[in-house]
Image (cartoon, rainbow, N blue to C red; front, side, top):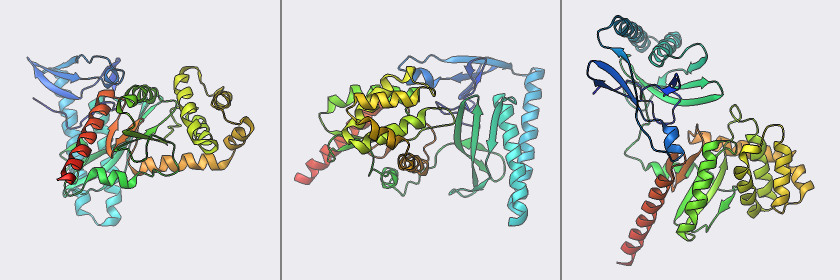
Length: 364
């Protein structure tokens, strides 16, 4: 089995579509062809069955395949030279070498994923990573209105490039996440002493966030007050033109009457398809009235800088946790991206079982 040097994880724009089919997340050899196998995440996110899409574009030994292989080899060779030079140069000249390495990485990825000039790809500066011999960089990919940021690692010898997350096994990642999540001054639903806390970073205009809303509405009644939900604003304005207006509306509802936030929350997601940038303000005022809020005070809050500042603070808190897509959920600190209802239930059940085991141990 062959594996790509770059891991295109589910939901990633780096699993880019070519003729409306996603380019490879994993590659395998089938007969005498190189076949690219993909599991499209969008089906899973919407609760649909995932069937493999198979693309077999390159026949081994053909002139096109060999030319493509030669081009990739040349790009990697250039990257090797650049990174080796970077390691040997003093700090002053290392910047130029890093810039050249960024260009080489961009060329490699564009060739690998057939990213044409319509795809904006920005490779950030290379810097030292916690792992010896590895550098890290952030890569932004913009395809139309869709944008994603991902962290990549490249070996200092220029040989390996991969996407992934580093886990320090000497630390508790869940505790680290919980320590960074700002849970005060945020809408909360449920018992503060509940054994499970779900923190969701969401965008009111995001379709998958609406799926999460529907999933939570279905799941939470099954747990009889054992789960608490905290909402954090994370509007992605470059993709969703009315998301910030909705976030400010939610913040104003929370400030006027905390329990009314959840009514506004439901109304926005339930009516997401009829809200637009042109009617968002009017719709928010309407939903506030339906939720029992005083209209003039709500309008005044919507126009105030304080509500916008609160949304900005929530977004900044998400960035600190390296949230770069919505929805991103933390279940007792355990990160999950997307709206997989079964995975949410798995996390909740695990945490409840752990809490029960801890109580039993305390009684002994």
